[in-house]
Length: 325
Image 1 (cartoon, one colour):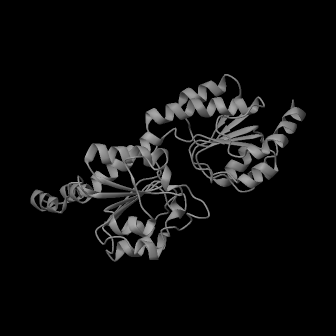
Image 2: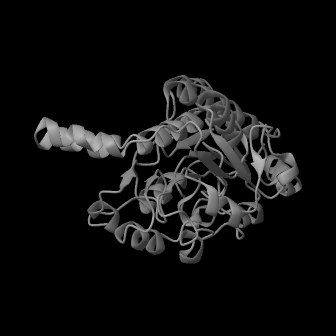
Image 3: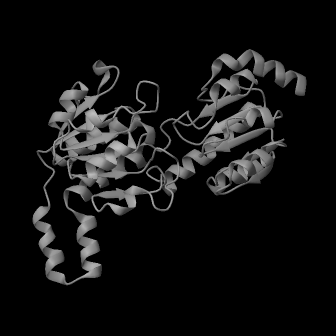
């Protein structure tokens, strides 16, 4: 069996795979490089978006494992049509992402980025004076858009750990954790000092934060996005930041996976940018690497994965497995 790892996983998971399969490892590969490497593979593991035609150009593929929660990295309809089982790892990095969000709230409230930059490039006293813009977060309001594994943990951290008021918005408001008070989106936008997005990308959440909704935020509010980039209309956010209509933002995901040189965000001093690493810690990588290896081998053995994304493919997948066997 041949397994293609498109983005490096924890060495323990890679070693487990190598005990049972031939492994090809890519790193920061182009879409054409992924296509070429996938042609001889039986399964792939990815943290990046794969080409939309991957299952057409790589007909041997039988299984795809998304090394994360989101399911938009693999063309699901095409996978199902080609009899490819797709699995993902929900919750594997939820603690790491929730801690990143708590860090973001603290960094933004204490004006840390501006202060450290000023201290590196100028005199002590002007940098110290920037501390007058800092805030205590106790008593402030955090609005969580998406309160699943990540949002639920974050609600407990912010409410129980820092004494913040927490509002929550999701499809089922009756399923919010006790630390988050239910709120419709308009109320959440109007009342929150921090808005944290951890919702998945769906037709309903695509550009959920458009110009109209961003305009409903407090002029002092900060926006944090660890969900999916296209949940925010990027041009609208750039305009709001440039015109100082909101306090600022901290972003880990973007409309396109990578920020190209010269992107408008780089010219703004009220946005903190990180390269899609909110869930990337040694602990989460170790957990997820081992689970990714085990679920990939499970699918290659003709068994159901732990977290099946397209269970409707099962009959076609099973018939392909029998033919190959």
